[in-house]
Length: 165
Image (tube, rainbow, N blue to C red):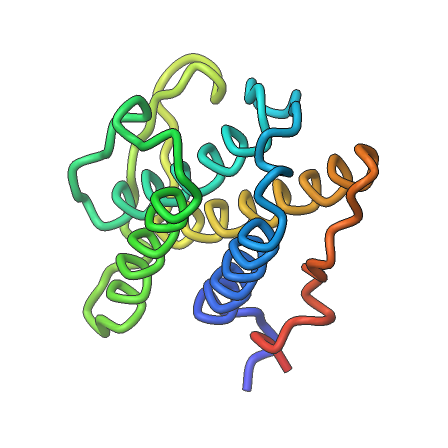
């Protein structure tokens, strides 16, 4: 066995974390209305929309599906936002289950935040980026809630995840 973390394992961790956050907010819905200043979001709910909406758009790019416009993603409720994650997850699980999928295929992207010009990335790198993007934001969300006086019961560290042995 190679000493590597696979995309399957990262996706399992991401699925586990998203489900934990959904459960947390189901039990604490008022926290979705808390102010948030991360990534241009005004509230925690808008931030969760960003996290799960970005997951969906990355998954769509990776498998060459039409990209859902950011403004077309629902602002809520939580169940509609979680559906963004489950759709992204289904897309990535499908690609990971396809033995012929070309993970080394290159996608050229142009975004202002990448700097001028076109940038080339493998699908594999984009998938890893998408999955780690969510985890990074979950850590920010944990800190934001704790600083607002609402410690989250979500334990998101990979060390505590059942997704990886």
